[in-house]
Image 1 (cartoon, rainbow, N blue to C red):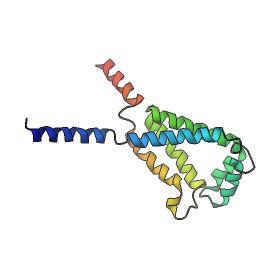
Image 2 (image 1 turned 120 degrees about the horizontal axis):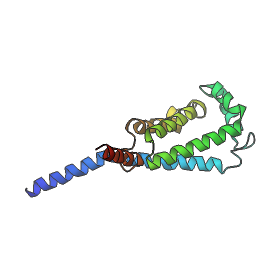
Image 3 (image 1 turned 90 degrees about the horizontal axis):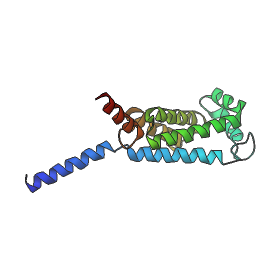
Image 4 (image 1 turned 180 degrees about the vertical axis):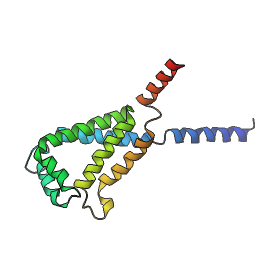
Length: 167
């Protein structure tokens, strides 16, 4: 094999590795961000209050009339602290699962649903629309919903173990 062929072969291998691992930076970013968001909410006593500055209750009351789905906000307002805890734990679990690559498609779908609900309520009135980051997060989750975590994940490890057992 000539030197040119070796270089071309190595470049081809690098491109293939890049394609295989293309979603890894997105997975790490979304996982870390959602773990942080969940922990931030769970440790913020002001956020975990029904009323007051920085509370989930005041936030929900503030966006109720401008959200795309006021009934969804009304539902959250029935138990604002419970909703805040549910949201924070959901974000934490989604983030941890995506980081570990465990049930990644399901976790990413959960992240997409959280982002969708926040977009339709909290950031719905952002003008122009691209100022509202929840829509961007929704779109960022979709590749992981479609592809999962095929490499460097518990999902891939489990698949590998299952295929060995059946072989």
